[in-house]
Length: 306
Image 1 (cartoon, one colour):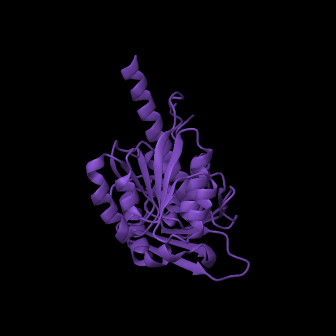
Image 2 (cartoon, one colour):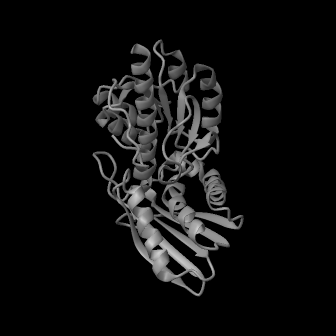
Image 3 (cartoon, helix red, strand yellow):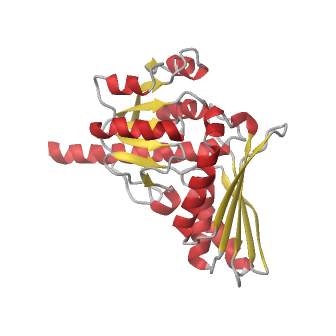
């Protein structure tokens, strides 16, 4: 198994026990991905609505379920190596506080701005041993590899990231998190580019048929050469496709110091529709982080046993 940087990941050891907090579409897709992973074993899916379709589908997949939310995670007799948080930014802060004493790795799929930030194509995927890992937002995962690459090559003075998601996959938690989404994404764009003048925008499209997830990066970069911009965008897309195969550049222009790179992400799997690439890219990153954590734990166990 390889990380996004091409580094070899140890291939021995059994799966680690993980939990999923949240039973919306993100949580359901995570359960499906966990079921396909040789590194992870679903030990609990927890929500707050006993009648939610997500809990029912998790139970049908053979996962233990609970409607007690974080309390069910805390009450478990067997610890979890990883907890995926697919709830809300406000809830995540409380979850992080409660789980901190347990030494659990908390993978945050909410825009809470807590924990170590991970963008696989830029930072790699090695997480801390415990604490919280922030995946920023779906728009952040799609845009930041491009923004980071442009800022390394050109004199970028302004960045604007505009993401469009289909209304039918923007669930209650996404809508509750809109303000946090915009602030967290803009902050991360600045952090990864060094450009203080940055803006993030999220469009929720009611179009029928649903719009495929797209993120457009607009940048002011005087002197940017169109051929170099296309090369940067193409190289970036290749790195992202290591873990999100549906990621592709659909438009790329540079003229009079204005650069536009538009990427589209289509989803694959048995839960998400093709247009839900926003969920696909962040879920893929989350599982990649958890698998890396499991592989590192397995390697450590081998050393101890030897």
